Each structure stands twice: as structure tokens, then as C-alpha cells.
Image (cartoon, rainbow, N blue to C red):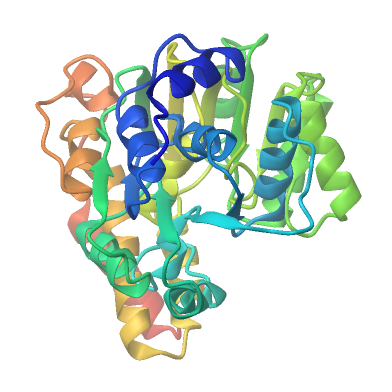
Length: 386
């Protein structure tokens, strides 16, 4: 086996511009270079991409990267070209496979992609080629699913710390449509880049229009837009021609932009996993970033409608559990960072200063469990009309 010890530091400096590895990056690089299978669970912004791009620059042969999103693939290709990787070999010799967003293989996680299940066949067709799987979010159940379904052989499992102390987390009850709350927040972040997440394409267009009318450099982004338009918006945001992206969850996965200073949710996200990935797009440079969520009972009703449309009763029950988890998170009075860590199987002390519950333990808190139960019972008994 070649000795990559010196070369990896040279590539880190010369190609990526870094003097040192981030936590767990070097372990991941060494695992891949040794030809061993790998599962890396590292929060967004922790440096997963470098962990497999750097070995690809050192090893002979071609690395195959499998990703669920075209936008992510485009971003990665542009990054590699910028680092001098311009030649595509016609006589391909594979060195290893990279499975990005590996949680998509598990139907018990989030963003499940049925096509990802076919990746289990890699072991049949390429038994001697190592597999490196990467994801930002995985509960213990999903982690075991990834290991089992990808048939990883004695893999090195690396899991980063969930807690990101540069993120200031705030959750508030939405007042009316939340537009005034959003505007008040943006008035304190006028020169900064950020993402505003809304529930539907219609609401994305409405929020973007509102911000544009108020003079903000904002643009809408959702899956219903033409590809050329989405790509143009993406490029404008990456190069700071547009400061604010208003988007559905179709935007953000794999974006390589380090100076996003805030992520603002207009409504309750679909799952804790989605929420954690989405807020993880803020502050990737390690500097302070604000993440704010607005939510109301209407969000729960709206999300529940979509869950009820699923015909698989077992999967429907699972989705309801996910919905319950994100609602409990939004309604809870304990440390936000601690809740997130516990959800993903980690344990930390309360952050004390980096979330609303620790800073404002008495802020606008009262138990509305009974009222919420009465409302949901009413919705159910009236055929789920509202």
C-alpha cells in the first residue's frame, strides 16, 4: 500500500487551502486510503465532502460519488474542477464508492429514496471495492439500517458531535402569518445572507414577493420552477447577488456556502432530521449564526393531512411519530441543543446561552396540551376539515 502520510497534508494545503483537518476528517481520509469501508455521520458544515474528495485526489483510479440531488452533484463537480480535477478517464478503474446522503436508503429516516435501496447490489457487482457512506443525520435505527442495507464489511463508524455552539436557536409561536416577525428579524440582518424556509411552493412565492416589495434582495426557490431558473437563483445566492433565498426543503442540501448567517423557518419542519439539516446550513464558517422557527397549531394540522394521505399504515404510523417529535421539540421548555443531541443519541449538558429556552426560561410559556387535544379531536371528528 502506498504511503500517503505526507501527500495528504500537501493536498490539504495546496488543493483545499487548509492547514489542518477538522475533527474526524483525517480519520475518515485514512480509512478510505486503507481500503476499508466507512460510515461517517457528521453535521452539515463539518467537512464531509473533503473527507472523500481528498482521497480521490491521491488514489489511482476513479471514485464514484452517488448523490440524491442534481444540484448537489453540480456543486460538487464545480468544486472538483476548481481544484484541478478536469480529466475524465475513458478506461475506468474504480477505487471506491461514495454514498452521499446515505440516510436516504432508510425508509425509517427522512428523505427516503426508493432507488437508493438498489445500492445494496454494489456488493454483488463490485465485491472488492470499498464503500464510504456519509450523512449529516442518523438516529441509531437509521444508522443500523445503513450498515445493513449497504452491507458494509467491518466498517469504521465515525460520528461527529451534534452540538454546534455557534448556532443560536430560537423558537416562537407564529403571530398571524409571521411576516412581521420575519421582517423584524431581517431588519437586524440587513447585510447578511440567509435562508427562509416555507412549507409550500405557494407560501414560498408569497413570502418572496412580500420581501421583494419591502426592498429586500430576495428570490424564491422550489421544485416547481424551471431548472434554468433554479440554477440561476442558486448561482446568485452563492455569489451574494441575492441575499435571501425563500425556499421549500428542495433547497440547500449540499450547498457549499460558508457565510449563511441565519436560517428562518416560517412554519414547523417535517421532522427533527429535516430541521437539523436545514439549520446546519447556517454558520458553516464557524462564526455566529441565528436559527429561528415560527410555528402554530395550524402547522400540525397541515402536516397531519399529508401523513394521512399515505396508504401504508405502518409507514403512516412512523411518520406520525416523526411529526410528534418535531412538535414536542418546538413546544418543549428544555435546552434546544440538548434535545437535538438526545434525539440523535448524544448527551450534552444544557447550552446555557445558545438557545431561547436557556436564555429566557420564562418566555411566553404555558401548557396548552388540553386545548391542542381538543382542537385535534374536533378536526378528526369533522372529517379533518378546517
